[in-house]
Figure 1 (cartoon, rainbow, N blue to C red):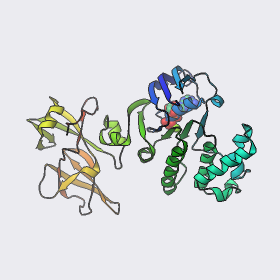
Figure 2 (figure 1 turned 30 degrees about the vertical axis):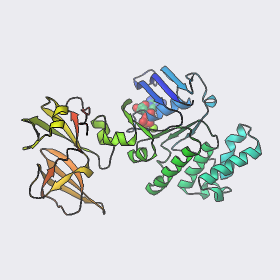
Figure 3 (figure 1 turned 90 degrees about the vertical axis):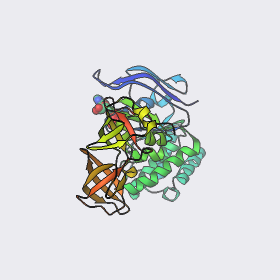
Figure 4 (figure 1 turned 120 degrees about the horizontal axis):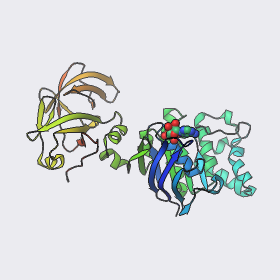
Length: 357
Ligand code: ADP
Ligand code: MG
């Protein structure tokens, strides 16, 4: 079984502070897993430890049941694609893809077969004899993917491979990546700081902040039940509104406005007097004239199919996606949708849970 297991893994560069602190993570064989987090949180370091390109300072790393701490990169059976996928400029597409197999002394007939197979999957068959400079950026990146694909390695590692592509190409490339995984189901680890890429490509997502795992779950779990404020704000665009509220007399107070808390939520909120609430911009229910909580529109942005509105309520700045009819300075009322709201502990930022429904 080609699973990957980190046990109490720490990594420091030059004996200085740990950039990875006590990592415990199991990546099941054949899974498409995303490592997601802001720049500098340690994603590449984790991937490079799997590839064997970085040493492990302490702890154990197992791949396919074997402890690999001291195994050379060349003996780990990994294929890796980087953001800067240098192709050999003087070699044709065909040659670029075959080169690694030539070094590995794969017989010519087999090399040709594998190359044609990979080119077909990535829609590059007709570009086989071109040089890299005769290709677009997206095509070059697909050649780099072909080059990794022909290795048919049980571990497929990708480090922000789409960052150099423009937005439209990134969208189509995401589908190619899923397709590659479906071809032979390698254990697939994909590093990105882009939450949309993570949500669309991942079967499971690990969210990191400052080298600590914040949550691991399916895209749905992470979107619907974020473990803490960091995850809640990292996933979704525009991001989740998280504001401060008070709890008193059975009511949730946002600024001067108090809203009766339903009984099932009261049990979850307990005896807290301060709390953070979270509402996604797409879940805001605004009303004119009257409603639960007063708000004032401070900014509007036309996105064509929707209006993104910033507003202030009880001192909290928030965003909403609405039908386009509000304007700057409008007085609005926000109705709390109790089946769409999230609550976080005011001190720890941790999600306090949800009523069973
Ligand atoms: P990410 O890929 O999430 O952006 P990295 O894994 O590249 O993050 O880096 C994590 C941390 O380790 C960063 O603070 C970075 O500055 C540091 N770091 C990465 N590589 C080295 C290195 N070779 N020497 C010293 N520090 C490094
Ligand atoms: Mg990186």
